[in-house]
Image (cartoon, rainbow, N blue to C red):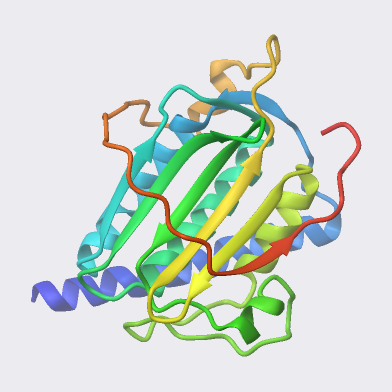
Length: 232
């Protein structure tokens, strides 16, 4: 019975993600996705997604935890960055087998704030890394439990990252896991969003201390994003 409930939960989550990706992509294509950068606490976004994905990770017996700094602010479109993080965590769970782990880490790096999603999943081959963020180039892979994919997630991530003038990189070893790094502009004094803007996006505003983890050694690296948008 428990296993059946777990399968139903994962199927529902997969269908919901497909709908979210399609809606976000259609807004992007139609030009209805406004770029509205503000300064906000990155920890709020991380904790919101930790709560959102904890049941899915638990149903697959995958550990999901946070590490790093808890006092950092960034300047970006909060809803776009939330969409990016949501896709990265969803993919990490999808391609990490039972007994594996996923870490969400925030830290300072080269005058930027870095948001890292690191997993111990099946990894990505160098052939796939070349076109990882290109729509329609590769066949959609199924997850370690047969989870279906949309083929839109990472392409959508790259488009949203470009809109924010930010950078997304990935390092991966087949059989050892993947590390996605999102580099964001630090927060700007006087540009903090009013609480009402963040209420819907970050409903749970709590912080739990965690121990910093060890960094993963670089392997194959794919660098994506060459454009900087004016006004970012």
